[in-house]
Length: 218
Image 1: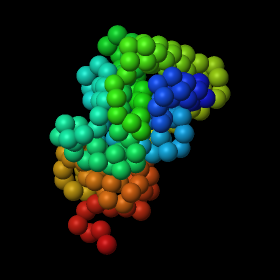
Image 2: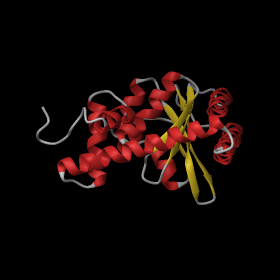
Image 3: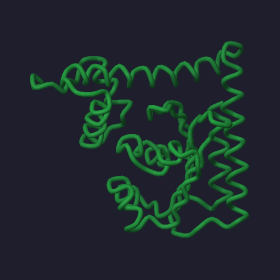
Image 4: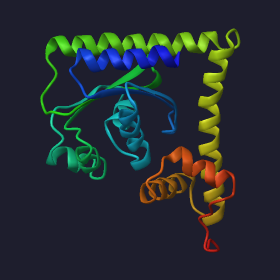
């Protein structure tokens, strides 16, 4: 399944003359798991949205509608004040996010990044929607194969392990600081941003008790 999603990302990159594309599987709580991307640089850009807690991927998932930003300028900066300058610094000047869903069930988002400004043409938008549908089918097929295929089971197990680890880290920070579960996630995101690490890495440190957020931390 991961290989299929990666091929879809590469196809999307070529079809839209983009610099890269990525897929993130998400939950209603904003936790993401399995990700696929066209290349390693795009994977890092995709991760930034979850580190900052803002961006087109998160908005597309929340609304269930595509988020099409042809120019990451001041208007986008007002919408995503941290995300916008960070990705512009990495050479991204336009981004298009397509929710992956079946009816009301939301599975994740397919993001496309461009190194130049400009809207998608009608033909490009049509190609993007077709490839997004292919990503949905790949995810559904992966779910159906869990239990029957060892590789599929391992991939989906990793998704849920990552989600569970982040939830556990949130709970530990919540107890350490006496704050809400939402504020705990905000603190984890802030630490990930400040230390230039992914949410996944910081969550693992918290769960392993190598990182604490309370006043006794040294």
